[in-house]
Length: 296
Ligand code: GLU
Image 1 (cartoon, rainbow, N blue to C red):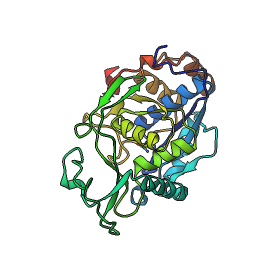
Image 2: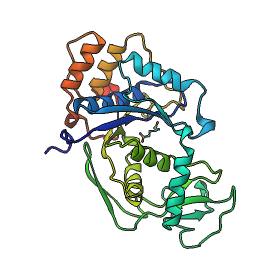
Image 3: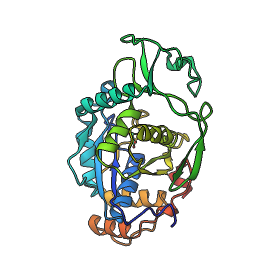
Image 4: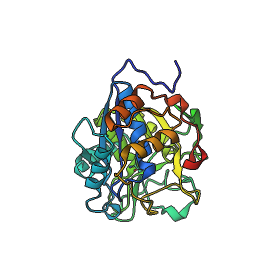
C-alpha cells in the first residue's frame, strides 16, 4: 500500500487544532483543507479543537472568528468543538500517571540555558518540586525513534541530537502543548494527524508520550508550511494577512494548488469541495518543510 494513501478500511478521525491567537490566514487554511479532505476522502470525521492553553497568547473572540472563517469555506466539524482550557483535569490526571510511572522529573533549567536540544541537566538530579521554580520534564527513551510520515517517509530521530526530554508542565503550572495535544488526541480517538511540517519535530516526542500512556499513536502527515515573501512561515504572531472570506472558492483553489492537487472545474462551494474530496491525492503533496505560493 502506498503509505501516503492511508488505510481507508479502518475508522478515520482527523482534526484541525488552531491556537486562538488571531484570525486564520492562508497558511492555516491550507492545513485545515488538507486535514478536512484527507478525513472526508476516507469517509472519516473531521474535528476542530481550539488550543487555548496559553491565556496570554489567546486573543479574545478569535475562536469565533476562526470557526466562522472555516464555515465560510464549507469546513464544518462533525462533533462539538473542544476547548483545551476546559480540559485541565484530564491533563492533570495524565501528569499524575506519568509521575507514578517515574517518567517525568523536576527541572530547573530555563530555555536560555541550552541551544536546540535539552542536554538532560536535571535528568538524574532527583530535584524536589519548587513552585514557580521547576518544570516537569518527560524522560524520552535513549534509543533512536523512527516514524513513518505519509509524505516524508521514514524518519529517524536520535536522543540528544534531534530529540530530547521535553516539558509537560511549565514552571508557571500551565500544561505544555506536547502533553495537551497527546491527551486530546487520545481522548478524541484521533486516528490521523495532518498538520504543518513546522510540527514534524514534535511527532516523535508525541509518539513517545502516546506509547508511555499505552495508546496507539495516530498516523502522521506533515504538509509544507506556507512561506511569506520574506521566506518565513506565515503566522498569526507575525500578523499574516487574515483570510478574506469574500471569495472562499478562490482561497480553496489557492490551497489546492499549494498542495499540488487537481483543480475542480466547479464554482459552487459544495460541488467544489466534493470534487476536491473525490480527487484528493495526498501522495502528490510535496515532501518539503516549507514553500511559497509562487513556486507552483
Ligand atoms: N495548535 C497548533 C498550531 O496552531 C497545532 C497543533 C497540532 O496540530 O498538533 O500550530
